[in-house]
Image 1: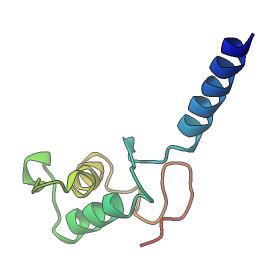
Image 2: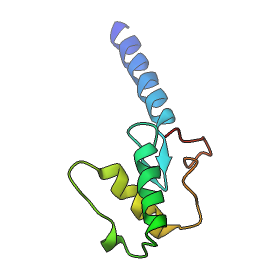
Image 3: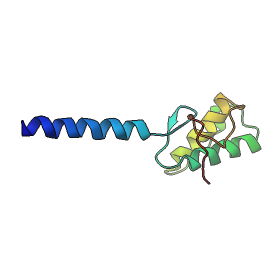
Image 4: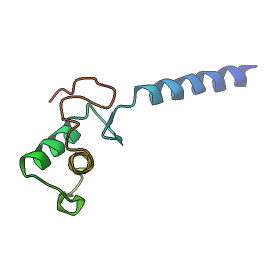
Length: 89
């Protein structure tokens, strides 16, 4: 019985965690998606049209993914995540 309660609680925790995951252009955000938005805005400002032109430097994965999101959909904008929630810079 005790194990069932623990497993049930763990399952609820995992589902709640997954439900809160934010995405930007289909890429999972590890924070508030501001890194993705920055990469998107950079790509927009530099008229990037190829994923090969998106810079990947160090651990700036979210910036890179934001650039890719722009290449994939230059009309989505950078102000909201995929659920329509505002991104705080």
